[in-house]
Length: 330
Ligand SMILES: Nc1ncnc2c1ncn2[C@@H]1O[C@H](COP(=O)(O)OP(=O)(O)O)[C@@H](O)[C@H]1O
Ligand SMILES: [Mg+2]
Image (cartoon, rainbow, N blue to C red; front, side):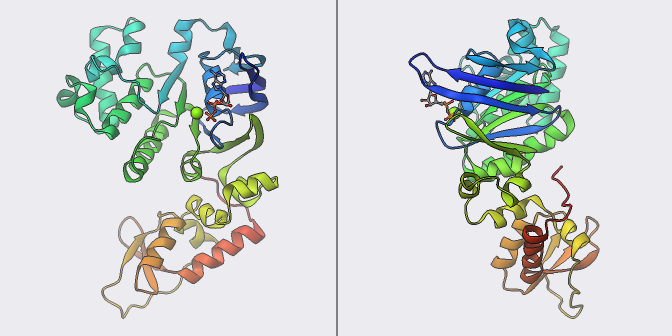
C-alpha cells in the first residue's frame, strides 16, 4: 500500500509540480496517474523511490515513511520501469535482469532459476536470449526485459513511467495484455504513469487524473467516464467517453443484464465471437462486418445467442442513464 499525504513538490527555481496530493494505492492494485504533459506525473512517481525529494507532506509505503527507508530497502521494495527501458548496452540480457538480485547478494543458483522463471513469464527463451545484448533485441523485447528486470527481486511495489509509450500501437496493446496477465499472478501494488486515455482505461483499477500538479479526481475508470466530477474531467475524456466505457464491459455482462438476441439457425457461414470479448471490440467488429448479427459462443464453442449493434446501444444507454451496480473490472 502506498499513501500520499498532502504530498507537494516545488523544484529549485519555484515550479510547484505537485500540489498537496492525497490518495492511497491499495495492495495489489494498479493505479494510473493520468494527465497532459507537464501535469506532474513523473515527479509524483519519482518521489516514491526518492529520485526526487519531497518538499512538503509525505509518502507512506506499507505504513512506513518513505524517507525512513535506506537504499537497500528501497531497491528490495520498489521496482522501476521507464519508457527508454534503461538497459545497460554493455551488459547481457541476463546480467541486466539480475542487477538487483546481484546487489542483494543472491546465490548463483537462485539467480539462474529466477532468470528462467522471469523469461518464462514473457514467453522468451532464457537460453536463447540470456547471452545476447540489448541492441540485438527488438524494441518490444527490450521493453519486456525492462519489465522483468523491475520484477526480478520480487518487490511488492512497482513504479512504471510510460513503460510502453515508445512502442507502436499493436505491440503496445499486446504487451499491455501480457502485463495484465502477469499482474494477475504477481499482484504487485503498481503506480503506472500514462498520458494515454485508452491505456489508462485498459490498465487501471483506479485512475488519478492530474492537472497542473493537482488531483482532479480519483476513481475507477468506469466511474470517471460515467460520472465525471467536474467539467475538466468530462472534457478530458471527451465526447466518446460512453464508447470508451464499453471497453470495461464484456458480452457476458451485457448478457446478464439485458440478454442476447436469438440467432438464426438457418444461416450457415456465420461469424462468431467469444462471450468474454469486451464490448468496445465487439462493437467495432459488428461495424466492420457485413452481417447484422454475430453469434456469441463460450470457450467450448457452444452458441449462446447473437449480438447486434442495437443490443450494444441498449446496453450503452442503460449504463449511462440507469447506472446499475455494474461489475468492476478485475
Ligand atoms: N528537474 C526539474 N527542475 C525544474 N522543474 C522541473 C523538473 N522536472 C520537472 N519540472 C517541471 O515540473 C512540472 C511537472 O513535470 P513532470 O513531473 O515531468 O510532468 P509529466 O510527467 O506529467 O509530464 C513541469 O512544469 C516541469 O517543467
Ligand atoms: Mg513524465
